[in-house]
Image 1: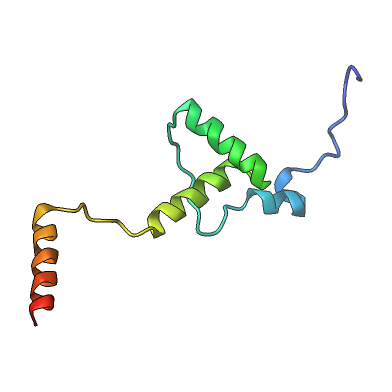
Image 2: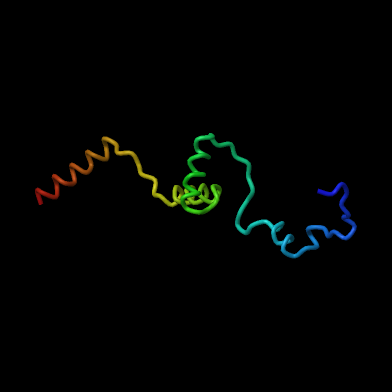
Length: 93
């Protein structure tokens, strides 16, 4: 390692095309800060490693799946009674 380096001919990152592209924000993405449990991060890191992607990509995929899954309504006593009545009425007809 040298004691001194000459940076007089160095370019700024914004002047280098491939570095400028890295500075652009990703389309349709927003940077946020979030606190997650250590075991959750560790689990997503393992899943991401197995899938060959980054752990943030894996978390994003899991969130997409959770949003796409239909929300199930809890089974209530009224719903059970309604179904039983419908079945009994259909057998009488």
